[in-house]
Image (cartoon, rainbow, N blue to C red):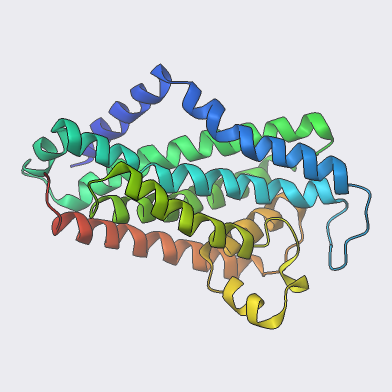
Length: 251
């Protein structure tokens, strides 16, 4: 079963290598946002901001944004495989559906981590200081967990859809609330109480705050809470993905 998941992962990695434009395209918007907002608001005092400067505060948010976009839209590969018949072939294979889901999530998460790491390294060109190797390793843990959550979410929706345009519309509809409620652009403490309550049920909030705790040493949410929520969310989305694939049609 591990071999099957590994083959699915390797297949998607080969597709990624042959199409580097996917990585370039996925990091362009977060990088431009980082440059524009980080430069434009870098020296402005922002109430509730605990990190040294706005650029540093923004980097974990842009990493989360990259993972959010990459993870949710990774479900598009399921629609392509359904269209060309590959999905039917793997669905009839004598392996548990959870193995197929793990292989898919592993490839989507790997892609998201690569993209997020590029954003973190690129931010150093504009003054962001990378933390110690131990803290960066902790940030990688949050990148993995957040990628698993949103890759799994993309697979859940893709397993029930056959239209690529419809999938794109639904993902765009979901992405914006996830992003703006997560505190990626401003401290969640600055939000009105009703909106702040919505932020607390946004899984991206805990991914972004966990990244801030790891990269900056300060966050609005305690590190153990962020780690527990992200871990639980990852487990739930893997289980949901397996269930949705188990009950979905291959054609």
